[in-house]
Length: 474
Image (cartoon, rainbow, N blue to C red; front, side, top):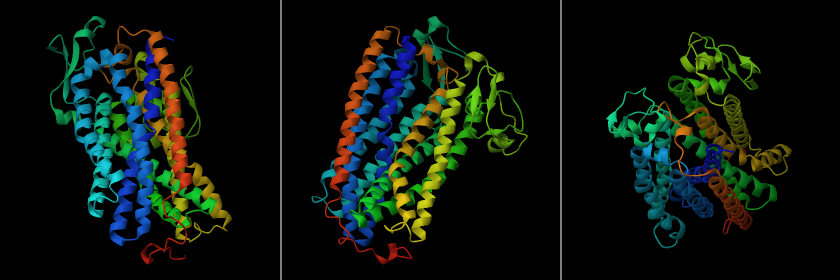
């Protein structure tokens, strides 16, 4: 393999591994705020014990997330030096803001969250929890700002050797050493056309990741007949977050697709396997793209894509045949990853609302009900689904913007470092795989240990369900 392919594989591997943990931290942060808020409202110690247990899990995900994320900062300088120099003024400001305003906020209150249970007052500890959760969300803001600017650049201009160039100018190979993007308006960079839609969709996906972790562990305890009171409360909070976020993901995903249609038409065409520019464009439910013949095989809903994008069947959607071949993304991969994400999103809606229905009917907590136990088994393994949806969505977004690393300005092949060899990248990639495998094994071991130990002091006798939280049929 050449250096470009290896560098892309290395970055994809490291960020895919890292991306397991920040969504869990964001989702668990929201859940912790809810748990501690309920404890302050009701003074029910059950919520206090619940918050303490999930705080330990949060601390574990935060630690692994930090350890796995540092590597990517160095990759920008080693493998992607030309890219780093080209976008340094813009990308660097976003990353600096993430470190100063978000990471320091999150880590500054983390010690109180983890170790201050018996050392500070309830309200101060709740405030620290809110700040850590806010910091986790705020960190996502700046990362999404940086990535969204690459997808839809705004508030900046291109300079070559200090000379301002027109928006459609693409530097020649010998000019990259003297080319860079310069900020015109910081807030236009922050609020570029895709920031808010991509941020909302990412955060909602993180809420789902945290919610289904709560649901999965709770279902495990219910199946084992352990900590049933704790499990019921945790699952209720998880299901409430899951139901809301799974529906919100439809709204945010639809809005994101409309932005893609306007600013990245080749990506939308690849996501849907659409080759001919047409009105009344069909929506392909699933299938296979034959890139040799330019056909997509699979069931379609006539006119649905045009309606979703523009509100009517008369909306024209650009097809891949009107995109120059060298500016088309890998169609098959983009199509499949996008459709996998959508399919999992639908499955998450089904699972969360099925649980909500069983909860409403008073069936979900009945250990003698085959329907309840079947749902518990599904819920145990459903923890993987939000993670897969998040990964597939990121793959679709990043593969779909190829060959651009900065849309319309810098191609991925032009962003590589000039002095890094394929053997160097391959060696570091193998090293990262080994280290990350050990990190992941450590994470699974510690997480399993915490789950097996269970919450402190939690038992079926410890919990008396308050009237306002009881199911009407319990």
